[in-house]
Every structure is written in C-alpha cells, then in structure tokens.
Image 1: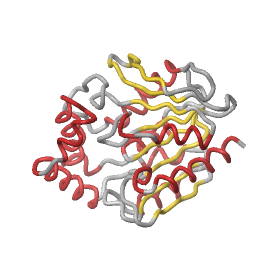
Image 2: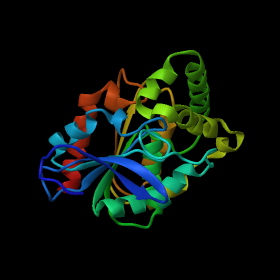
Image 3: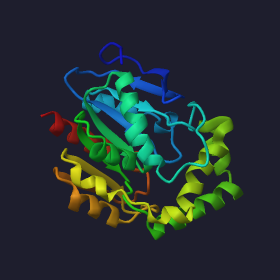
Image 4: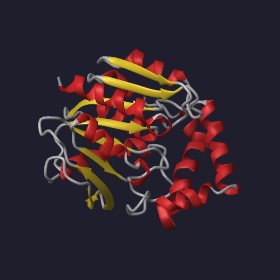
Length: 267
C-alpha cells in the first residue's frame, strides 16, 4: 500500500478471486514494522472496526490494513450457501492473493472470531513465512454447544428485534445474505464437526490470545487447545466484564495488549 508515514486512512477496492473487496489502509508511523492485518468477525466488515485501526496505528507505529470479505460491507456479494470450508477457502485461497495485491510482505494477523480462525488456518496451513505474529481475539478452533446455542439465539434476535436494522447500517442491501451466510452454515448439522486444530501444530510464530470472561460464543476450551498445540510462544489475556468483542467492550485494554505484543514481535 502507498501513503505518507502517519497519513490519513485510505479506502479502496481490490479484485481478488473474481470478487471486488473493499479495504482500508492506515499508513505506518514507522516503515520497519510489519503491517497489522485485521480480519473481521462473522458479521463484521471494515466499518465495524470503527476507530480501532487508527488507534492501533497510533499505539504501535505500524500500518493497519483492513478488508471486508465477500458478502460483507461494501464488498461484492458472495455465493450462497457458504460451504463448510468457507474459512479454509478465505485463509488459503483469498488471503494470500489479497496480501500480494496489497504489497504486504510482513504481517501480524489480528483476527476476531471467524477472522481469528481464518488467521490460524493461514498461519498454520498456507506454507508462507510472511506472518511474524498472530493475535486471536475470541477465536474458535472447533464447534461447541455454547456456540450453537448463541448462534441460534442470534437468529431469533435477527428475526424479532432491531438487530437486522443495526447490521443494515454496515451491510446495506446485502444484510440478509451477510447474516444468513454466516448463521446458516454454523447451524448446519454437518458443521457440528467443524475443527481446525490440525493447523495449530504448524504455527511457530508468537501468539496472543484475547477473550472476554463473559464470551457467549466460546469457552476457555478454545484457548486451551491453542495454548497446548502451537509451537511458538503463546500468552493469554482474559478480560473481566467483557463479552465476545474485547476490542469494543474493553478497547483500551485490548489496544494496550496488542501494542505490547507488536513491540515484542518487532524486537
């Protein structure tokens, strides 16, 4: 990506695997640091990160690249129904090409929820050596009953409350496709056996895990599996009075933790 050091956020589109994907880029304050690549949750997009990219850029000095996956935000629509391997496809087919087009050769992946799973698959399965560190916020490495129950509840809220209207502010006319594309696949019978633990053994870079103590979509079993299997150093930050989105529920604590992690990775 281009731009002056410490410049304003840039927004644009890149054509990747036949889809037009929106991105944002906050230029670095220091050129020697890896780029932070933000990977959003199952209902997220560029805009839903709010000012988190700018705050990370200010606190770390690194450039911050964010994009919306196909079917989210202002990106082109995705084909539905999503396959059970949709996170594998994103990590192993889309993300490598996207980073190459963006000119990102060194990165710290910062993923939230589905985005954290995509980051873990990429780091452990792409065979690439461009990742220098990984921040997994509320990650999933297997499906569990708590996840299923909360995703079922999300469907009820979408159909009976103003949740649809709130999400439409970010996803516009494709809000139904964005929600159903995520919700339907997680509740599919076949998806109960979804598991990406096989990719953890090959991860050799430092890992930071961040999770809220009141996370309604995943238990500590997810973090324990990652801690047990990754080959690099791994630390965990558990945040009190925090749900599934630490960067929104506890933004300052999350930002400080990521900034300290990036400083250690750079050193």
